[in-house]
Length: 503
Image 1 (cartoon, rainbow, N blue to C red):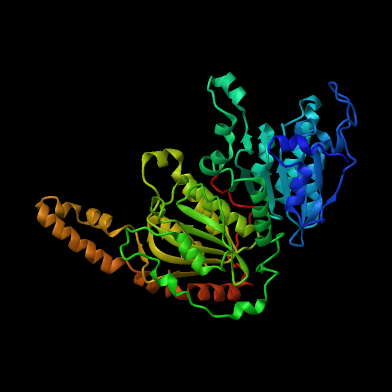
Image 2: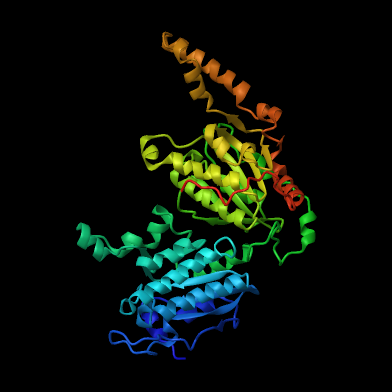
């Protein structure tokens, strides 16, 4: 087979085959369907004219783990999707399902092959069906390595993780020319659907990378940490480590100084995350979108875990519409594969304001409540500092059946902050006071509220918090819980098909 490598190189891109080889282990790729081609004569296109119909499909390994992969070739009729092209991709996904291994799709296409009419649409339909069949059973990763427009965007949209690449990725339902014709608005393709747009604004992308090589390395890292398929109630250990390592007992004294003395001071939640998980294992997902929440995968003594945390250094860690969507989707992914969820709570509440209400904060926040409640994987929660109001409940509280809830000594569990509580509870009494009297009285009530409510004592007494633990012992406590809960079984069950998550 002769490939037109130079045509892609002139565009600053790798060829479809080069991309496959850069992702997989050396010499591991085996192509499937290389002899398939377009099957119909139509609009000056001859039967058998396009080799492999513009998409290379096959399988290989990543760190010796089997994966199925396909890569659209822009040098063959612009990578457009005809019937054979679409059915080859659908069959690749089906092969991944049958062999219980991840599937990686590299998208670089001009969209549907107009000359093939409804047959092109049939190809897309087959892909969407198998994407949906695979969802929650095997990991699906999409790489946008060129154009991805129109109906083509919905296959990546169904998959689990989307990678975009600076100056290469373009992804939109309706292109700039159509938008200009319909609305009169002028916009560039990059401003409409470039990598930055989807990483920071739309939230469509999960990872934004500076170039193709860096992207492919990140894909390998992600595949390496994720379970390769759904397995019932098993912890997922790193296959490369000695399991005896798990018995080493360590305390991280750095964690005892992370939380600032003043509760209104910010800090970086990643310092807590990296102090709990194994070194250099945390892979953050959607790092540039809804930065008030942090989600990602890591290992804890070799065990794959999902981390969900509030980020105090961005919007004080408050929850809003976008962060709720981000958290809920991540919960559901982890629950699909029985990946234990570790939640680190420091949340002052849901973001107030008419913009959030108009955007549907009720509906978006409800997704988090639903996702945590529905999840049957291991759920562990550590309340680091603030846990106020409805957001306290939403962040994997005992009421949503978290297996264990812990609190650091710095935890503040209450309906709201002391300042707001004092103003509401004693507002009428303070109304006729002088400024000096009001300030002194208000401070007295704030101190009283802090002493009475802003600590984990009441929650511990009621059983809503299992233990107050020292920060430096957090890693060991969580690991012990993972081992205990590995074979847990849910006893609460209602006989139904499924719930109706507020989408």
